[in-house]
Image (tube, rainbow, N blue to C red; front, side):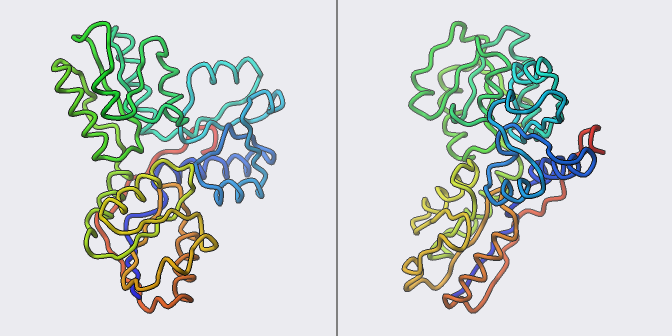
Length: 306
């Protein structure tokens, strides 16, 4: 059995930045440092940071007055920022700069009196944060069916935004319906789906027909990891999403000659290598790396932790 390892895979620049923000805050201010929700959607990362002294909270009121509070890579609504100030929390923003870009676009559309159509999953924390910029004029469009039925007050003043971690193909399909229905649709100057999401999905597509089974390593709550599994399955072969080697089922690999492996943008490389090691135990005798699009992007850290 042969393993083909996709590259790029794993941490993107935004995730690396968010994790480093927490680690540097712990070094600079000491434990505990509080984090609103999971810093990224990966339990391995969250458990590691918890062991170092990070405390993850769902309610800001769970963080003591005067403590340091980090906003996750997914971004937050302005109301959350205001609540942190009211509670006398010292906020540090670890929002991915590409998500921050979407927030800025939402504010611009709202300022110019546009209805905002936000393509994304309405239950995702990133979408909740963007909607919070202009909740009275933002409509979430989750799929093609909703794109066909959505109604707006003024068809000449519509702006469209996209969650950064969607399936590129599905987002384009939804966008196509919206463009057909609303010819005057205004889009951002640069696409919202992030480079890392696009690159990881592209690498999986490039291996269509070359693998017998996909293993995507990522957390079940990770949007981009789920999209990778869906794209692998769409090629007509089994595709499984696992957090780590303990979730592998030996029966999956019976009769399989080539296994494709990739990982979501919030998945640490240690999880990938642990899966590779387990597959070696199950009979994998070679590992080949497939490289598609090299990534060199880096983001500046927030001033508070530099």
